[in-house]
Length: 194
Image (cartoon, rainbow, N blue to C red; front, side, top):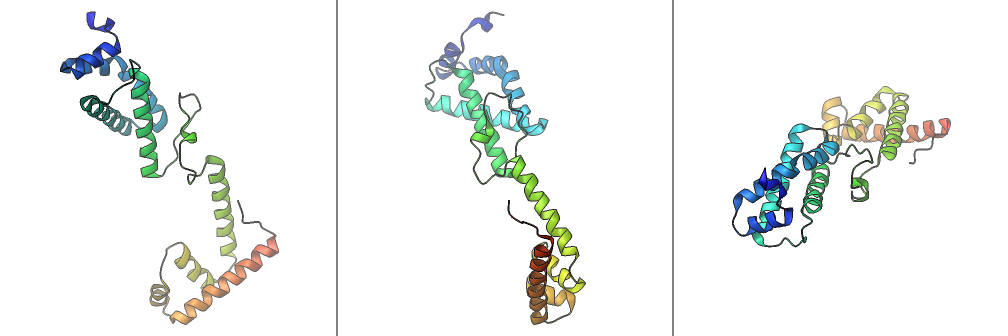
């Protein structure tokens, strides 16, 4: 097929000057590589399809605006756009990407510091399960208030309504629960820092 030998840079120029079919050739030429890159990060066909579409919407907008100046390095430029969209996707869904270190970019290097890396997440989960076990050692009434407050995010008014005790009693139970929790932690010599 003759169009295969037209360099990317020439196709970009053709597209900018009004040849709509030039973009189709570029998409066809690079689709597999870009699609595979996105899929290797998100492991989901639908999300990959969405990010792939968004990548080319961005490419088209940039080219139409005349803001493209990669001097013929079309593929790396498109890969960078798709890479940024992958990061946006994870930021929006605050989920860590599956990253196998074989990609051309390190997603971890550009994710915000607030994201937990895998190791920290394991520690955090471990601490949370330790805390859950400690909570189980509390007297039933204290445990109930603590779980409603911390895990269900209920107000003391809601806790009072649900348990049928006064707000003051609920507050008192919460206070004792925390004091006892601290005692249990000391007794077990558990370090709750990560």
